Image 1 (tube, rainbow, N blue to C red):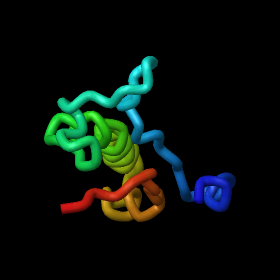
Image 2: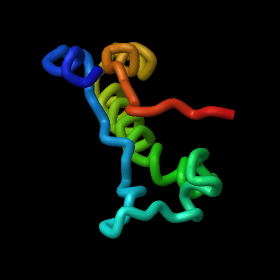
Image 3: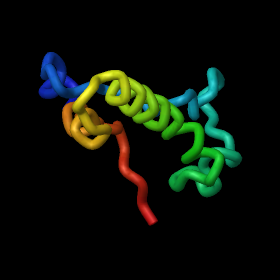
Length: 86
């Protein structure tokens, strides 16, 4: 999917993998409690880059007179590398 989106002017790819897999190949239960589903801490770590990007988009929108934050956010597409399951 990343290759299809690369080069799109209104798309920004984010790395939502904050290093869940350790150098020894293990995954800690603090991030993936059953080694499949993220814990609250895992979600916080994984989506920190998304939150930072959204804050940046809002700040840039505030700098542009006559442009609402919603318009600026619509100009940027976010494609995370995984989806939350419940």
